[in-house]
Each structure stands twice: as C-alpha cells, then as structure tokens.
Amino acid sequence: MNNPIARLFRSRDKPQNNVSAAPTFYFGSSGSGKSVTARTAIQVSAVYACVRVIAETVASLPLHLYESTDSGSVKAVGHPLYRVLHDEPNAEMTSFILREVMLAHLLLWGNAYCQIIRTGRNQITQLYPLLPDRMEVDRDSHGSLVYTYTTTDGKTVKLAPEEVLHVPGLGFDGIMGYSPIALERNAIGLGIAAEEYGSKFFANGATPSGVLTHPNTVKSPKALRESWNAAHGGSVNSGKVAILEEGMKFERISMPNNEAQFLETRKFQVSEICRIFRVPPHLVGDLEHATFSNIEHQSISFGVHTIRPWLVRIEQSMNRALFSKTEKERFFVRFNMDGLLRGAYKERMEGYAIARQNGWMSANDIRELENLNPIPENEGGFAYLCNGNMVPITEARKEIPD
Image 1: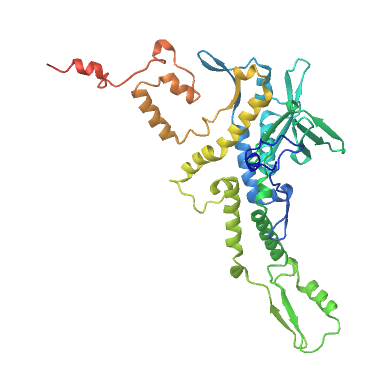
Image 2: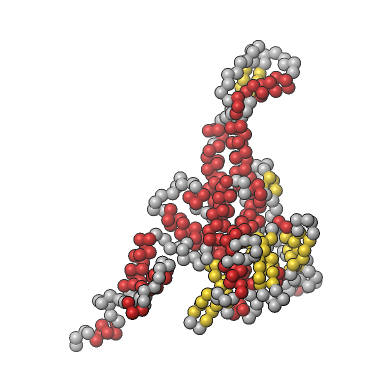
C-alpha cells in the first residue's frame, strides 16, 4: 500500500461486525443539567402533543394492500396480508394501535421494529411491535444483519432480517435511524428545566428565595432556617405574615420571573419542540400566530411536509419486508391521504365544478371522492360533459369561412 494511487482508489470497505461507523447519539444529560431520555421527554407537554398528533394522524389514515393489473390498481382484499395490515395485525391489538405505537417509537427512538410471524408456508399471519431500546442491530461474520432483542426477563433472542419489519428514521448509514430526542436533548432539556422551575416556584407559594440577615452572630443557623421554612415555606403558608425579631431582615436573592423571562422561555420552547417534529404550533394548542386565513394552509402543509414523508417511509419498508420477490412485482402497500388533503368544502366544490365543466371528471368520479353512492349509468352518472362553446381546434378551423 505504499503506492499513493492505490491508496486513493482503493475498493469500498466490506461490511464489518457493526452497522455503521457513523457517530452515535445517546440519551443523557443536557446543557441545562437535566437528564433527557425518551421517557422523560414524553413528560414535556409539547413533546407529548407533537408525538400524539403525528402518531394519531398516521394511524387514522386508511392502509390498503393493492394489486397491479392491466387496467390499474385494485384492492387485494383476498390476499392474506390485507387483513393483517388493515384490520388486525395480531390477537392483541388493532391496526390503528400498531401504527400508533410504531410512530411513537420512530419519533422518540428513531427506529420502529415489528416481529414478523409466518406459517410453514411463509405466509405472514401476525405483526408484533418490539421496543427499540431493547433491540441491537449488528452484522454476522458473513456481513448479514442480525437483530438481537432482549426480553423483559433478560433473555436475548436473535432474529433474522426476514423476521423483522424495521422502519428506520433519519440516519447517516441508511440502516439505523437517530432519535430526535437524543439529537435535540439540549432544547428539550431546557423545556424540562423550565417546567421544573415553575413547579418549584409555585410549590413555594410563588415566594422567591432569599436570605435572612441578623445584625449579630447566629448561634444555630440550621435551626433558624428550619423554623423559617416551616412557618413560611411552601404553598400552604403562602400569604402569611412574617415577624422578624432582633433586627433581622429578609432580602430576596432570586431573579423575578419577568426579568428571567420565564413565560417567554416557556413559549419559545414550545415553538422549538414544534420545529423539531415539524408540527404547526396550532395543532398543539398554541394559537398565538394562528388566523382564519393561514390555519387551513398550515394544516395542509402539515399533511404534505410532515405526514407524507412518514407514510412513504413506512410504505416502502413494508413493501420491502412483507412481500416475496415475486409478490413485489404485483402487490404494494399504500396509505390513502385523500381525506387529509381535501381542503375546505368550498374549495373542493369549486375544483369539482372546473373538472366537471371541462370534461375530465364525471359525476360518479366526484361522488367517489366524496364517499357518496354512484348515480346509475342510465341517469348520466358516468357521462363526461364540456361547455358548448368549447370545441376542438381542428373543428374550429372548419368553421372559418374562406
């Protein structure tokens, strides 16, 4: 390897016994001194609201299994996997619950895992979610991925790639996703510190901390401190009158809330956490900047820029892990986002009117999008109409006199 050209154009490294050489981001202490983990972060109201709105939105969207045919895509209701994905993934939960749990795992840990249960004929019958913090992903001596799961009783179970549905979040190696909580633990830690500060402040009866000064030497400072706290500390003693003897004085040493910008910090942390999860603030109850003119467009933007990438990530992971090589050519999984992007009723009707008048949508096409029963064909339900003053350009030339 003394040849400099050989060092420049060496082959790509083969897979090692770990998934990546990329940096690892761990939970832990933040800049505010607060420990940030998935379970402490979810206790922050803004984090809980963001995780809940994304998870529930994705879980509530219809998930169907389709088959590609010569005439288009049709629902493959007869496929055994259709019931597993659409109705009941296992004997203990519904499809909504499974997808909600998967999104919560993705948003908190950056990865979602499900164990795939198959029959002897390789038919998938059940999907069970697995906790990401109990899963380790490595490579064996042949370079293949190996999933090692630690059960509640401490036992380890090795799973092959075909036994695991793995949906990774944003990552650097394409295999493992990174936790948004671990990446942004400083921002979330500040929110935890602000909530704890407010709780302790009001637990003390909204009374700022201070120092008692005595003109002479105090024989027992500890006893004086304990008697003062017992008489005037805590919310139960709020509003009581303090009597200072022997020339003692009470001097406040903590910064007032308005100078510490406590409320401004709380508001900023809500916006900061919404920015991490890409959630419009009005969806978590922050209506400070919401108006009638922008709230609808923010909701549509939430569906396009926040929900849709998660849907595509889940769809492609399911298509890769749940179908055989031959099935991948015919079957695929897809969420239905029509209800999420429908917009206001008036705008939909105006769009339908334009499509109807220009002849590229029939009455039944429109009624299908609105979940209405079709009109019989003999009553014109499948007729395509257009304005009478619009004719093909070739016909218009014939009407021009010589």
